[in-house]
Length: 157
Length: 159
Image 1 (cartoon, rainbow over the protein chains, first blue to last red):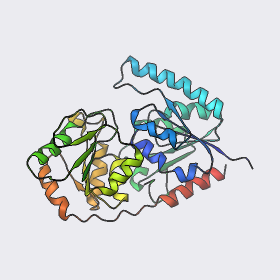
Image 2 (image 1 turned 30 degrees about the vertical axis):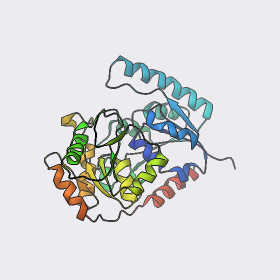
Image 3 (image 1 turned 60 degrees about the vertical axis):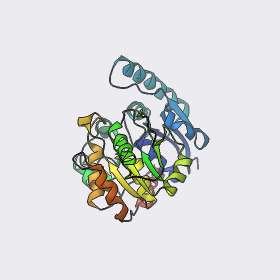
Image 4 (image 1 turned 90 degrees about the horizontal axis):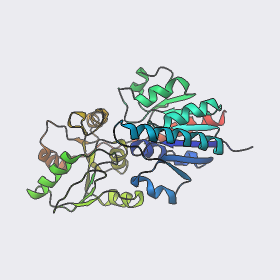
């Protein structure tokens, strides 16, 4: 049987740390990890099959939107080239175009709400929630805002 | 050695580093201090500051550290807990423009309630946290990660 191809998408920092906690799982598949081009991520190259996106600017000025557009196009290209069966993400904004474009191509979307969200909503999660095929929360209390969410008795840490 | 982690988010967290620096100057901290400063610019004669530390080296430093002083980010705090280390967890606050919202406060409160970390909230005296951490015995963090990964795997296999 052909192995499932898994695309993992993540913003830098804690979101990425959570995705990397899943390494035992995704290494069982043909995977590609996509994250931001940031100095804190450079050592990933030696350990993982990874592609870097354009780094985000600060704030929401015109540079943010140019980067957003460039990454939107990059997302299209990556999905067409890699042809994933599943996209897995723990947020945040970086994941949004991938999830929506992926959905158009029939890719299954697994969104894992960040471990940092215990009582409050997250913007990127709320944007992807309606199209997520599996929406996982890492705290029981987080189900309050996301009714169809699954809680599996713990988190990724 | 004491390890200080400010996270890799592109917003500075000078307030915490200033407190650590003052504690060194006042003789409250006498150990070597290694800081992963990320995007916080800071100069100090007491602290050994590096913007980014590779994950391999960070793993060694976590193990060698007497305790960790961390911002309230998931990766840094849980990195300490999973290695059974004492952690002083300082949430970044949006009112000081240290983060975009106050989710770090949520996380630190949850872990502080369970006696996993020594919290440093904005209304507290940082020096008290340093004094308290010495006698602090953290609760052991039990991970349920295996069953979470198993459930996700089951979903993928069902496709």
